[in-house]
Image (tube, rainbow, N blue to C red; front, side, top):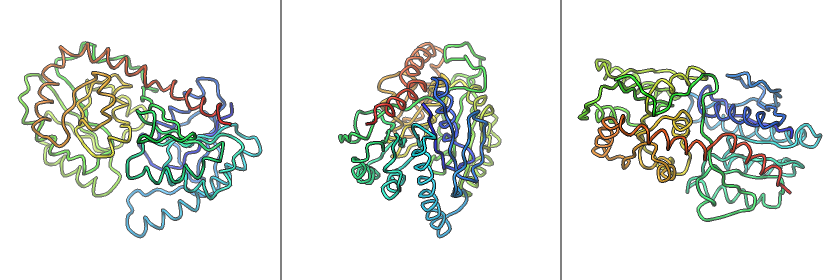
Length: 382
């Protein structure tokens, strides 16, 4: 099958890049002919090794902007999205591709489809939704209901349930998200391996002020821990206020030798080496959306065989099935302290269990199975 992947997100770093790369690699790995379709000013961080087609209309980044400028850029993005979809429709009609996958979509994409020629696409078009929260759900259903008579327009929602808040539509497919695995490094280390006497913990990912990093660090430093440990804190920042806050925290704790700060984005091999270098990942932040959107950081931990400490509202369905770490009630600092103490002090005696549970989770959330599921959706479209 000739599969076109359309990506318009202009982020310089982030899990969207790894997600696209995973998708390309896995689809090629199961024998499909993959090509990429991107805005005319798209800048690649990788050579995906597949043909690239640039679509008319520039992509838009919101990095470092707000207010009226952001509103204007949003309108520009919507205008260009219509151009991109129209061009993709033309490619679909002339047989250039057999199916199109949009790897990171929202209800706004569906709204655009409803006023675009692509709604009449002669080939399957699959919009991958990375979770749907209660606020977005009515808007999502409103647009998908309009598209129910469009046989080739489908949504693949990354969820842990068989429906979306109890509602099912024939063109909405609920599928489990995939793990992120090492692709540029040799990495066989698991939680069951013997390690140095010092336990290395990692706090990784995009930093936002809402993660309350200094509250977490104060809690960690107050723990009664009888194991030697170190903590690597990486923060990739997009907004100026987040960058300033991370710099403030780094300055505040710079005298503590157990803490090491990395204020930079990590991409590709450097990112993978950083994750591989730690024994466990700590995800103490909490937000309502984590109950409804899969956590790319959690699924990186699973893919790299790293046990975790996480707030209980981060994909609770995963922790109900697999003993891959410990959770604590969100925003409960005393519970966080107790959980950190328990996790760190018992790590060595529990690491065999963590390793076997991580292996089980990797089977269920396999990237190859995820790619096969998308192909199955495309193949079964009427």
